[in-house]
Structures are given as structure tokens and as C-alpha cells.
Figure 1 (spheres, one colour):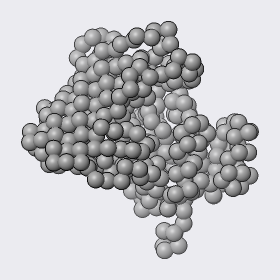
Figure 2 (tube, rainbow, N blue to C red):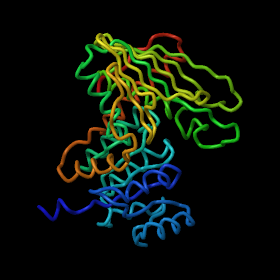
Figure 3 (cartoon, rainbow, N blue to C red):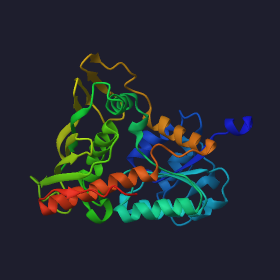
Length: 340
């Protein structure tokens, strides 16, 4: 047992885009319970670069066509899906069929149905599934969860959560293609605000009223630019949320019966900043969120526990997202399906 506890689990990254290059790869040099064992990519130049940089074994380098052979590779325990959203379901299911545990980036999938199929596949193959919600391992956001759910300042009354950036006109990426991204700012940036509202209250929203806005329709022909939406929770709290590809925003503010608490830098990978009615939050603003996230999943596998950011967590967010889009189209309040 002692030897098993000491063994680091091998992680293979599927997709070597910016997030893998800038965050996940470096994070896996700092993890205690897992390490970078392999990669899955169709770009030979990237494969060679990663092989040299991280001293990877040639047998642990796969293409998208031959990744199913990973089933025979004992070096790899976890496959981390870091691909465009439309590929999440396919590659999660392929990894699960190969007998590997899976971390899938957010948003989990294109729609609720795909999320459910991914969860079922992982359950059927007896592998664990986790979604890349790194903020569940970040101390400032963990404090917001505690303050809200434990009602440290009384019952939560209202939440303001905004997240966005200004998309460059010449930035031609898959995120502007609805068939690949599933949607625009709501899927990409708004999911953080939905998460924040849910984990501050500890409740699932039951209604949403939403509207969309486009100031650059030529760029955002297929996907949403800015979404404004109000979530209503069963305990009476409301959350006013905004996601945008045309506004720089990054905060989470909470009003409660006996005070307030907020993050003025809320959803970033570092440089977090928070305050309560009593003064500044004093936590490390630059912990490696991704390292903590991946280590936690490795421990869940070793100890046979369910991840705090399981597939069901991704499914819950997708149910909210689908309801937001329906409300934008109808212009009316939309009920949110709370069943799993």
C-alpha cells in the first residue's frame, strides 16, 4: 500500500494548444501525485518539441488516429482532453473505452445530451471523470464558497458575476465557429460566472432570464458576443451575470444579510484579489491551480473517491447554459432542469 501511495499517476494531454503549453504542461512539473507521461497530437513539430522539453518516451506519444492504442500503455492512467468543445465527447469516450480515467476541459460538451452520454460511458467503463474547474482548488474562490454556503455574513441575497475580454478582430479561431465551440462568450467565459453563482449559494438555480447583445455582428456571426442573465435560486438569492467577448470584466461580488464579500480578480490563473466587509483576504494569490486540480484527481483515483468537479458538475452547468440560450431566443423567463 505504501508503494502504491507513492506512485505518481501518468497523465497524457490530448491537444497541445495554448492551455496545455502555458498551464498544464508546466503544472505537471509541480504535481506531487501525477506527472506528464504522454501526449496526443497530430502536429509532429509539437510532438517533437514536447518530447524534448519534457523528456517523454517515444512510445507514449500518440496521434488522434492511434490514440486508442493507449489501452495497452501502463504508463498512462489519465487522459486530459484539451481540445475544442465539439471533440470533448468523442475523445472522452475513446479514452474511457481504453480504460483510462478522464479529465475533460470545460465546457464539458456541446449540449446536455452529450454530457449525459460521457458520464454513462465513464461509468460503464468503470473509470473516473473530472471536469477542468481549476477554481475549486484556488483559495480565494474556496473562501467565497465557504462564506456563502456557511452563511458567515448571513443569507446570501444577491450576486454579481462578470467575466469577459475584448476579442481581437483578426483572431480567427475555432471559438467563433458554432459547430466547433457550441456557442460564444457564454460557453467560454460565462461558465465561470454560472459556477460562481452556484458555488457561492451552494444551490442550483431554478429560473433564468436572459438577453444577448452584439455590437460587432460581422465578427460574431455565429456565436454570442455578450450575454446578460439573471439566475434565481430556491433560497431566494439572485445572481446578475454577464459574459462577453467585447468587455474586459473579471469580478465576483456578493451581498448578504450582514455584510459583503468579493473578488475583484476572480477567475484568472493567478494574481487573485479578494476582500470582505472586515478587510482584505490573505491567501496566496498565485498558487498553481492546475497542479492542485490534477493532484486532487490523482488522489481521487488512488483513494477511489468521486472528484469534487465530476462529470455531474459539468452537466449541471450545461443545463444552465442551455436554459440561458433558450431565454435569449424567447425573451422570457426560462425554467432550469434541476434533475440529473
